[in-house]
Length: 437
Image (cartoon, rainbow, N blue to C red; front, side, top):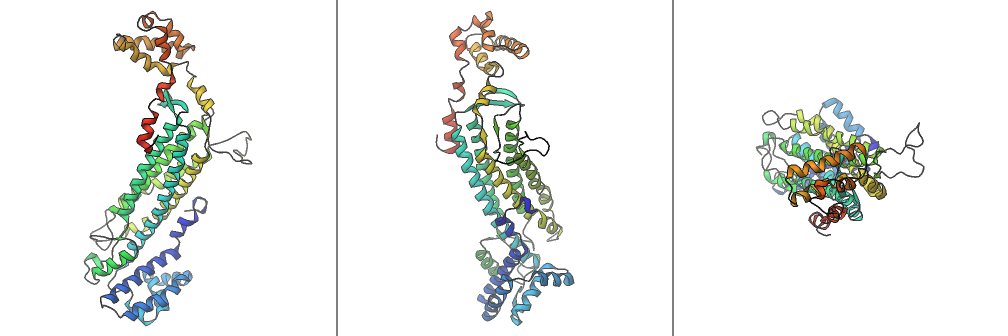
């Protein structure tokens, strides 16, 4: 991913230096296990650590690239480089293993570490959403369906919806981490014919992974498909909230807006502009993350026990999707933390249709007063459409309607326009979402 949309901690996971250190640890721990079961000399395993670790800690990337240009194989290039520093004992490195044992287990480590960062990102976002939700628990605003005014809600409830969504996403990501955090050192076509299963178990424990129950030289790619699909769902949730901010910031709405720093400029041509560039950026970044989902699904169908059609795909989507999602989650957290909310504009928009947003309450009251639903609907709609077309006050029009006033008195009718009805169950909803109200 390009530096503009990368944060150092997660980007570091995908640097070649980090990848080679992980590969070395896999190989060195495998040597320890082989020595423990008597398959190689113990001093050989010790030599791998003593001479190999400094060579990897101060790795010469140019030398590995030079070797790879000749051998056309990245794992062999790395092993050759390692052998140059370990010496004769290097013949015991990679005993009975195949390249996929290193590549797939290494990728599992990288994805697990990246996921730990993403989980922390979600925790930070959830904390902000919870704080802002309680801040605006009773801040009335209009709810919209099809983009059109529907009935009142509260801005806190909007944020509670987002909180609940990202809480579900966190649970999904935890499951995806468990799904992806497996090690496979089972040798060619996964039979353990040349490497003892105890080696796999030892490496898995040391690398913080679980043992892959059955592999076919590669870790089954349905695991990776599920993982990237989960990242795609999280990206969809990011975009949903970003689009909400973008809509609320439209000039004609103006209910909330992204933070706009002192000295910030919104347009090179129009000095008055305050554009929702962060939220628009999040929409774009979400597309990048979701673009990894289809290739990950297509990687599931490998030929027989193994091919490498998945390899080039994962070398692109694994860093790009995780690094981009990390950046997007951090950016969304900043947007929601600094979001400027305008309750006065929200109230003005609530009043914009002259009370039409209370039409359902009038409809229900008329049916409870004895009118058929068809008659009640017709009475409410004819007055509502008159206000919609000609303006005016919905309550006053209803008061002038003999059919309506024949069923309800003026006090009953006026009470139906009390917005308190739409906040009366806010505590119940908050208790469900946050466990407190």
